[in-house]
Every structure is written in C-alpha cells, then in structure tokens.
Image (cartoon, rainbow, N blue to C red; front, side, top):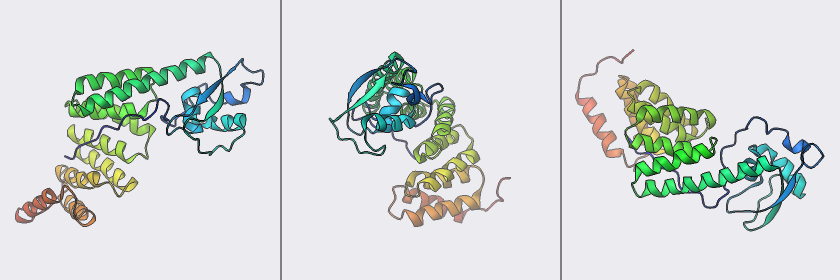
Amino acid sequence: MTPLRVRTALVAAAIGLAATLMQGCAGYWETSGSGGRATETVVHTVGSGESLRSIADDYYGDPGAAAYLAEVNGVPEDVVLDEGSVIDVPVDPEDLDRYRARTEAKSHYNRGTALAAAGDLPRSEEAFRRALELDPRFVDAAYNLGVVLLERGESNRAAVLLEQTSGVRPDDAEVRFAWGKALFECGRHARAAEEFRTAVALDPTMEDPAYALGLALLAAGKRQEGIVALDGYLRRFPDGRWVTEARRRLTEMAAGPAPGDAQ
C-alpha cells in the first residue's frame, strides 16, 4: 500500500485553519463595536500566508467574519495581505483566549511535524494530540495525527479520526486517500476502494490513490474492476513509482485463473 505524508509545519504562527463554523460565533460582526458587546481593538501584524478569512477564523472561529474585518479596515474582502502589514481586529476577552489557544496549538503542531520528520512517532502523536486539545477544529493536526496512528499500526483509531476529518473536508483528496488507507488496513477493502475512487475524482493528478484503488478492488475480490483500475493507472502514470508493481500484479493475474468477482 502506498505511503502517506505528514503535512508540513505552518510557516507562521497564524496561517489559516479549517473553514468551519463554531456555534455562537456567527453574527459577531453585526454587534461588535456597535454597543452589542464591549470590545477593544488589536493591531494584528499579518504573518506569512494569512488572509482576512484565516485571521477571522483564528480570532472569531468563523472565516465568514472576513467580511466584517474588511469593513472595519476599509479594504475588499478578497484583498491580498502583505506580510508585515497591520490590520485592526476588534475583540473581546473570549476572542483573545481563542486566538491564544490557536497560536499555542500551532506551536505544538509545528513540533509534531518536526518530530514526525525525525521518525519520533510517539512524541509526534503527543504533540498533535495537544494541538487538537487546544483547538479541536485544527483539521491539519487531526489529519497528521491520523497519519501517525496509521504508521504506528493503530488503523482502527486512525480510521475513526480520519472519517471525522473527511466529514469536515470532504473535498480534500489527501484526507479521503488517508481515510481509504485506514479502511484498507482495517480489512474494509470495498469501502476503501470507494474512498480511493473519490480521491482520484477530486484530484486526478494524485498517483497514490489511483494505484491504491486497483489494490483495494483486487483485495475486495473485484478482479475485473481491479484489472481495469491498474491498467488505467499505468496509462495515466507511465513513469509512476508503482509501475513495476502494477505490471507484476497484472502479469500474475493474466497467468492465473479468473474466478468470478466477489458479490
């Protein structure tokens, strides 16, 4: 089965996280600064890769509040922020607590990626878990924790976590592929094939799920579908890293009996 990659460290302390809403945050920008709740203004220095959406997500728990920040700062909502520039962010104590927790979570996340790169999976797992404790919406930390759990042979725990992650990011091909691998390792080959097929549809340039789809179909007893998938992999990735193995499998099946597909 093809390998997974731990997603890399965040370049700055405030690169955006998951684009999901936290209950109680929607509508905040309608009352802040207008007498609805007492606020103060933080002068936020823009870090590498930040946008109004990521900053709104970090402070308010809602990327949709970017529209409010755009209005406060007199800029378009889709403005490209220069690193080192500053914007005004109206906040209350709850917002500041959220931002501090997210900043600390990113520090643990970065530590986890460094530990994973060094091969220290137990301590990497601890770091990603701590990041998620501080910020349960930190999707990349959840993904990386799932990858580490798989590498440590904890396929059932990884499958549960990656299923939840896929629910938050259903259009993320890497997440769907990771969930598929966890399912495969749990012996749920037909279900894994569905996730690999989805990953291929989401990103046809990804080689690994294209190859893994063939393996999963074969493991599920879907011989003819597996042959078609492996043949399709070879045609789309003629110089791929799994070409030799795919050809070997096809040759073996051509030389062997052809039982009916499993039902």
